[in-house]
Image (cartoon, rainbow, N blue to C red; front, side, top):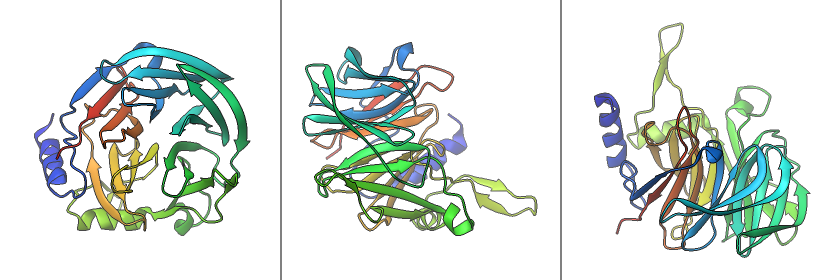
Amino acid sequence: MKPLLLLLLALDAAAQPGPAYDLAHPTRRFDLPAELTEISALTDIDARTVACLEDEHGRIYFIDHTTGTITGYADFAGPGDFEGLTRVGGDVYALRSDGLVFRLHARDHRVAVADTFRLDVPNRDLESLGYDAKRKVLLIAAKDNLKGGPTIRDQRFIYGWNIAEQRLLARPVLTLSVEHVTAQATALGVHLPLERKKNGSLHPTFKLRPSSVAVHPQDDTYWILSAADQALLVFDRHGDLQALHLLDPDLFPKPEGITFLDNGDLLISNEGKGGRANLLFFARQP
């Protein structure tokens, strides 16, 4: 790794509050088979098993996260751009990028489609699906920006789907401003990458395009991956930035999935960007 990147990662790690994970040194790392090169989502199933999607097929893969072994798979739909996956009790929800959501019964490495519904949101390229157990809502985030003026293009939304009432919440769970998040990161001492404009001025290249979202089981914070920035962001329930971790591109080539175990252990999956996909396990530090 380059010395400058090592310095930036060290400064970043020193500035972060909240639950402690050594993101530079995973407790376990597994390279995944070629069939999961484009792994696109991740969720916990039980204390030993996680599930994921490969973004071109409606197929769930089950992985033993202690060995990295695929223990089974099950088809639930035909080809499609599948990007999000989250467990809610005994059900698993899978998100297609056009807003179609599949509710699946999952048991013993078998799945059955219980029903489907479509999300009526203004974005057209949905990327993330998580679950907020406190609010009992699905969390949905998009990769594309809304069309409009600078203020609209600056905003990112985490939408909420009320499971009990089967409806989209009237207002997003979180409304984030890229400009505001960038300012908050600077205040936390995080050194974001810069680019030089034609007039010679330097500006952050930060995009904030959520690729996955999860809720920490102990402190209820929102954890958002942005694969475009190779970054992991932590927000409180008011949308204030608590931490921004710049991730090592050699370890996190394209972070596309995040989930927590009930005890707070963290898992992140990465697409194989010019190499093999991987699954990283980070034990929560005391």
